[in-house]
Image (cartoon, rainbow, N blue to C red; front, side, top):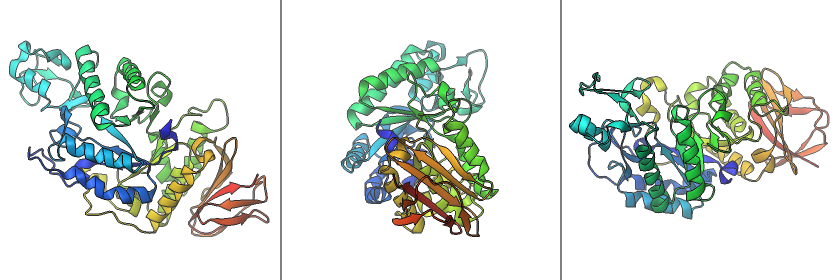
Length: 436
């Protein structure tokens, strides 16, 4: 499918556009700002955008009020259609956040229950009981997502709920022409619902993508022929940065070997998972890494490992922000995109990945591994790539059987000779396309 060869760019629209945190109900066409960023996104080499929530919500986007209307703080449905059309014209696919596990207290059907209680035809859309009370003193108890009662859990066993969601998805495809969904807290979603959602995806648009937010556990329970096409690779997220911070490359390479290694028992061989170094929910990578020299290297690792990478807006030039300062700090508004040596490096990685069969579809094998260095192979039917990283402040000479004498070094567009060992300069990464 198209996503397997993609580089994603994530935008959190409410933060990106500088919208107020509370929904003030004032219609403002902020979402059109995305169009101004398209040249930057193209130059970066991204071929798909994942938009965090865009639909009418109470505050942060994940407490939906109406699945059929773009948030007034962002603009109108017509405004968002202009954005999607402009992105498609630039060759960029569009994936929206599908927040189906829960809605906001301002969701129209929940408001009806608050007003009519037992007489509301929507009382079975939620997990509630009129024999208790909520922390908001509604006069009835309801289930919230993980104890967050501003997020009202939907009853995904109710066919009317499912049909309502599916009707809105069809509208998003028919009107906006979106190319897929990222499913919020997919690990919480009813699995029968996911099976039905996959059937819908197969019907509404060729190669319509379903990528789930999964944190832990066995991803293959959700990513399979009957459910999701892909998921977030949180299992490798921590290893990516802690391998550099602890100067222990064994951590991430062992994780990748467990997931994608050559042995038949490896968990996710032939799966394409979304790799990332940060996103809207976690501290930005430039604030996590204790040594800023490692910033380009961690992106080489994220682009070189199996899967498809997703870059969070602003991180491509090294923006810093800490989770402890609250989610809004992670979802900043920038007047315009910036460009520096890190952005150059990521753009080069995106170009390399786009043109590499091995990086998109190849297997994974560890070739050389020390605490401070790693070299791994990505091999496909027609191409063999080696990715090398030296996280040390000292040069390192790597001695290993390359299986050939020469390679094209793709980051610097130079020739590399394996004779006598391969010297890796301090804080450098290399992508070698091996001669046949």
